[in-house]
Length: 310
Image (cartoon, rainbow, N blue to C red):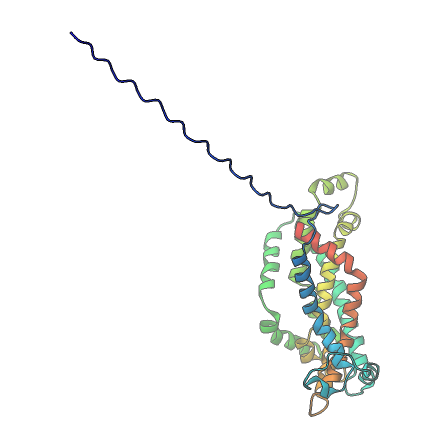
């Protein structure tokens, strides 16, 4: 009997070695400055420069037209360099009896300064109360404040306010412009949110244990912590009321204007609009706001950054 032998399996064929993969190209890391912020790239610098030019050009164009004759504003090609009439135009605008620009500046400073001080003061008080004090009806009152922010004064509140001013015989007086804006819901809401995030309850409780009164806590603890937010709220309130036009236009006369009404009187003093004088009046009107930005610029940026972080 013969025995069958199984065939031996064929030896596996060795595969040729795979070529090594090329090393991945590492992405170049952006340099980091000493304060931990990424250094700006060339494209970032170009983009920021372009945005800066777009932002500054309207102001530059206003200065150019204010320093030239009115016909240069509509000429072609347009004038791009300032002229030599700026000082003369400023003097003419300030001494124009029909415009009352100096009186408008004084009235606007009184109105805006009073409203700004009142809004910042009352908003810090109300914001502290809503954030840290527990009293009956606080949620209902806060909901009312939020609801007031949804009601546009310009569309729904003008007629009732005007009727109130007629009954009080306050037409053509500064208090008619000041009273409706002494407090607003946005300021209360902003300060309430800031107090709630910036001041822990433990600090308030520790101050009470040490014998501090509610007013003392607000004066010694809350106000110093709210300083950045107060600067931002004050600037926003100042700008809003400085540029207010509709309500002063309704309750004030041409003999007792604000700065915006005085600029309007410059534009309607003649049958054709004198663009040079209009731009001159506008340039004068932005000087107080520009001074605020120069003086409080660092605090404004600090307050905005702190508010965004909270």
